[in-house]
Image (cartoon, rainbow, N blue to C red; front, top):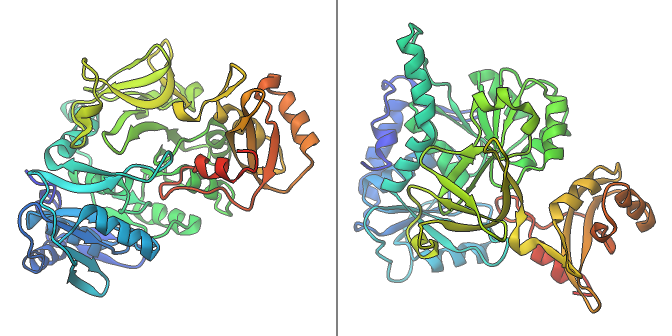
Length: 456
């Protein structure tokens, strides 16, 4: 089975609306016709790639399905990337064709032929170095979708067996770029569940709330940055939304608490995954109802996923499937070192404590940047914060805080931190900046902050 079948063989009748945006809707029949029209125009050999630089919307979804129908590999290119980054993506992936709003054109050079079953290319987050391409296959990605959908299907089947009417899935709202793994995953998840897709090209709080009301969305995904925008916006009601899955970047407990304080009827279902293996740990609605005290945890492992913590605190994961090439990172027992520090509580919930590479060693004392950032965000002058380690002749490393907000004296922030932290966790310096550098998926690029500090 190909991922293209999720759209081409979607259970909706031809006249039913399948793909929607703020101001456009097309039916399932129109989507299938568009795919059929595009396939002969995407004249690629099996395994050759097609780079697509289109905005989020029905045309993008149909183009991706057509690429897979033609036997090609989808290479997403964010239309907002600068030209130099677009050139880098094309050089790294060597596609045969490039699709833009202006049409389809051949790409100079000899196109690469990818291994059988490869569906698309995504990129690592780029927080520790230049992003690297990752290959996902049709087979492994279908397994990933079914792994997550399994408990939902089982619950539906149980309800129907007890006499309940079959539920028609509500539309799946896609508020993130489909140039990212998170966008691709959530679009395919909706199609695999038999749902319509509601696609946003740019996130805007009022438009998001309007789509939630219009399509009666009860569950969706949001990155932490979007949740912060909603918390700080004029939007006061997200009904009938009940569940939000946090994606793309770590969600701090403080951000979660601020959001819940404003939109109290909405459960935040944190989750954990990596581009190489998809989501492997997450929340169920039942867990959210039973364990509201665990806001901030990333949930429990999905069915078929095994986890453990190594002696040095690293989270190790053994997923049923993963991207092409990731087997090189498996140990003898098949576990993959995620590079994240974590703990598992007595009820099996996983708490992420930070990246191993971000841990600051201050004269032998270990400082988790995230813990310090949470304290800094409690100060009314601070709207965003990132803490990095910089070199120090005496202690080896010291924490330095980069802050966004209304500047105040360092002594004020030092006193604030000392109220909540042991002395060695208090930043040695505070630097005010206009904004924090972030990757395309919203993660702070700590290495850029560290290299910008005069003492590093």
